[in-house]
Structures are given as C-alpha cells and as structure tokens.
Amino acid sequence: MSRVFSGVARWRLALGAVALGGLINLLWVASAQAACSPLNALGAPVVIQSTNDIQVSTMVPNDTELATIGPVEAPQLAHMGFATCPGGGDVYWASKAGPIVANRRVAIGSSGLSYSITFDDGGDFGPFDIHKHYNANTWYFSSAPRFIVHIYKAGPLVGGTYQADSGSGHAATFFSGNNGGSSVVFHVNVTGIVLKPVVPSCSFDVPNTVVDYGQIRAQDFSGVGSTVGSALVDIGLSCNGVGFTLGYQLDTDNYVDQAGGVIGLSADSTAGGVGYRVLDKQSDKPAAFGSMSSVAKPAEVLTQHLAFEVKAQQTSATITPGSANALITLTLSYP
Image (cartoon, rainbow, N blue to C red; front, side, top):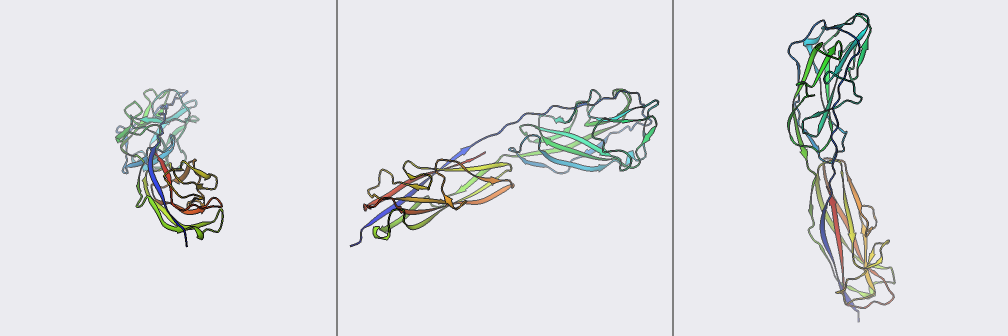
C-alpha cells in the first residue's frame, strides 16, 4: 500500500518603498580684468526656445545631464564686431557680470534643474564655455554663432514650465570691458523649458500565490536530498521610471538549509521528513532567503517576470505522511 501526503506552499506579497533626495547646485558668474569696449551691441536678445519636454525619473542622480537644447544659430550676430581691446583685454561669456566661479551652472527657478550655455562662432572662436582672454585687436564673429544649452539635475524635481534666468533677467550675456559693467554685446534668453518628472512606480501580477502539489507518494523519494514534483511561481512586474533598482527578498520561519534554498514545514503541517527547495530562476541558483536580490532597471519601462521553481524535497530518512505546508513571504522594494 502506498502512503501519500498533500502539500501546499503559500506565498505572501509585500510591497516596500525607498526614496532619494538631493541638493541644488549654486549659480556661477564671470568677470574680466582689462578694458575692452564693444564695437556693436545687439538690441534684442538672442532667444532660444526649448521644443522638447524633459521627462525624467525623479531617481536620476544629481549632476546628471538631462537634456541639451540646440545647437541654435543666431544669424543676426554673423560678422558682428564685438570688441576692441587697446593694450590687451578680455572678452567673456557669463551668466551675469561678476567674479568667475569654476564649473558654473545656474539654478532654473525652483525646478531642481540647472543650466550652462556654450557657443562657438563656427570659425576662429569657441567654444565659449569659460572666461576668454584676447590680445589687443578688433574681434568679430566670422559666422553665425551656435548656442547649446545644457540642462542638469540639481536637486528634487518640480514639474512646470520654466525659463533660464541668472537673476539678471537673462540666461547669459556676452561681455566686453571691465567686469562686464555696461559693456554688453548681447544677451541670450532661454524659454519654454517644460519639466515632467516621472515618479517611479511598479505594478505586479501574481496570478496564483498558492502552489498546490496535491498528493505525492512518499515512495517516490529516493533518499535525503531527493526531490519530487516541480511547480513554478511566476510574478509579472511592470515598472516606469529610470535609474533605480528593484529589490526582492524571500523569507520563511523554518529553514532546513537556508544557503541551499531549502525550507521546512510550517506549524500547521502534519507530515514530516520533507520540505521544499526553492530555485531563483533569475539566477538559476538556490533562492537567497533572508537577503535582498535585485533587478537592475536602466530602461524607461521594465516588463519582466520574477520566477521561482519549488520542489518537494526529502529532508530526513523517515517520511511521515500528512499535510506538508510551508509559508514563504516575498518582499518587493522599489522607489
């Protein structure tokens, strides 16, 4: 006569959350030392209009460059004489007049963004991304200058429509003369910066959290460590956002061999001498009970399955028939 036992592995799903924060970078300004005078001054500022929304995960690290605007040409500046420097002098590109600060970036309002702007004239000069010094002469743009606006994450992101403003009413200014002073050649304005932060989120599909083995014959086991049957627990997940890691962890109250992924039966069981071996199909290794594993998610959308294979395993020389139940808790952690 064959002896039988029945087994059920129950799964519980728990959701966790983590969060990251950041600091806002400070603005930069620039200056000059010698006297230069502008030959010409452009009345209306050069206007750079952003045309693409910035959609970015709130989890992206600070100082990450999120977007560029341009290159945008300013044909009205082509062949424009911008400075004469008798005896030597400086011309310089800055957010506004004042002392030079390295690695200059300017905060964009309360958006959590910062910006810098570079340009070249397609000829002799550029890129103008630092304080520039020239000998005495008359200088001009050999062709239409090309501007590029660089947008960075500087702190916690706040959605909205913004314009880049250094506090001078403009995004940047090309100066000639002492300290910028009144020697303005032209201003640049940057408008229409639309920020749409994406808060990372995940949804889960666990179609069946109960693994029911039905009845398994004790005589089908061949000794301690042998396994009978196999069932797959499949958890579908879909996550939006970039730059975060999804973690998952398995736990139970009764281990036979924690390192080997073998768990014992729960207190409501009447069977004995058996347990369950759990294989993590992500790694094809025994499940790492009690420690957090991870799924890296560099893409904007992650659609994936967490899969675990469960097998009944003989854990002692003598098997006692009856119900063989085990409870596994799966914790998922995401921003």
